[in-house]
Image (tube, rainbow, N blue to C red; front, top):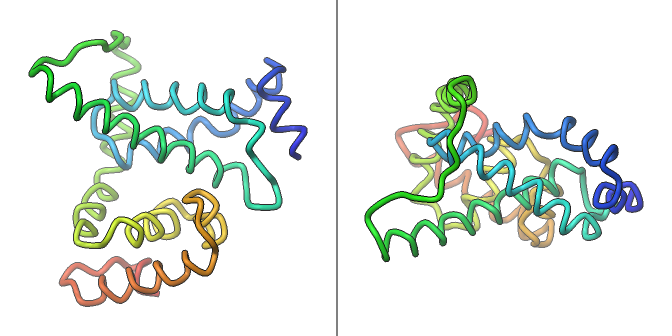
Length: 183
């Protein structure tokens, strides 16, 4: 599998198959976290560019392709948020966006609408420390195993289990209880 991943960086056919296999899951992952269709489209593209650059880092024994991709997507979102923060420090205007076709905007708006409940859950989890929140998101919302979440976050499986347990304990004390977070 390691060779298969490295091959996507050099073989356009292998990359296209990889892209088609995972683009919907990556788009949903991003739409749960971002509510602007232009940003979602840009981030999806950035994730797959990053995949080309880092295909050699994927190790099948550490988890699934999707867990690895979610790790890449998390880093891409973090980089985008840092970039946006710096941009807003410098100027009040938004620039540098490529125009999207009306159909693309409509499709992304539908995905964003479909993920509205997940964004509300993220707001409810805002009280959690970042490490606990990240594990909870990946396990409960993105449906990764604890092992895959640990891979995506670059932490040990035991640390992920502890963080998940703490997050669930905290959420049990909130008035809003997620069905998947408490069990």
